[in-house]
Length: 233
Image 1 (cartoon, rainbow, N blue to C red):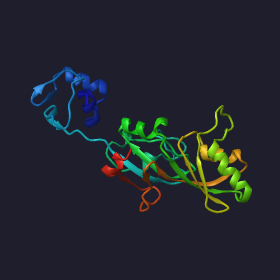
Image 2: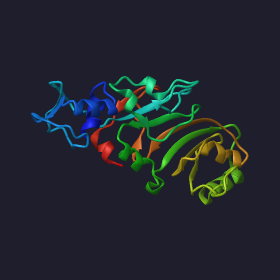
Image 3: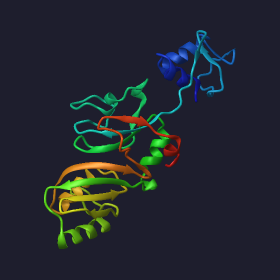
């Protein structure tokens, strides 16, 4: 990690103020004054500002069971944000890995590791996202068969010029279905059902890739990911 970034993440200094502190020779690395903001440091280095040792905090990875009425954003708006539900130091450095709509519940991942976030969300990863949906109109018989085929072949959504990637639709009952998609278009699952003449009443994300929502998490609760869960992506 760059020295100026470490200073900005572990003190109240901004990156620009960190560079000024370095120029004033207020920072030492392993007992030596360092003025170059691009100096690379890690947890093995003894980094001090004005004599106080700075601890390098590792990346954080969390899963949340997002409740209704909460936005997957880092900026305050009309609705409360997912960050307002998390009680960890420097929570403002976290960001959602992909998003869920305000009226969609379930699994949300959050991190401050940009590279890991990209691995999860990159279209090249073709990471399956599985949703449980309750429909407004029954889907059964020939209509259900046509819907399964349409999802598998791809659906041209309103306002789009290309059909969706192939998706898997499992009919669980007349009003309940499970959908697996690899994309993350705006309101995609709801728009797919709208395209076949139905409407989604409730939508809950159950899993992302190999990671399923922890059944012990109540709506609004979150926990840190275990190392094997982080490495699964």
